[in-house]
Length: 91
Image (cartoon, rainbow, N blue to C red; front, top):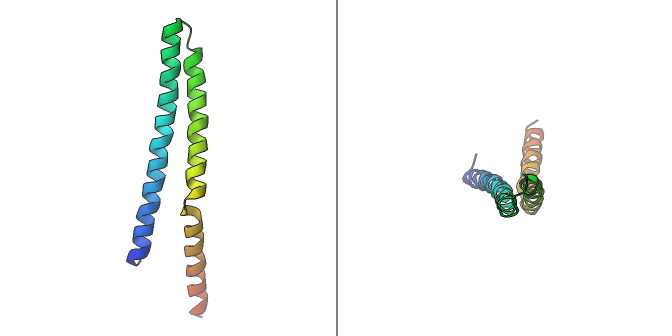
């Protein structure tokens, strides 16, 4: 593994790690707002549940956007194609 592939792999791991953190932050933020609304209105945990659902939807949407805009899946496909072409050229 050359250094270019090594740094590319580290960059991919950092992107995926940031996606996990962002998903968690969205869920906690929206659930926190829902909880705050429940306390202010003295209501049941309906707003907290709604906040969780909205937070999960927002977090998953952001996850999708980050992965689509990143080069993670395409770089892995290119590496597999390069590796298979190298394997075929040896014969």
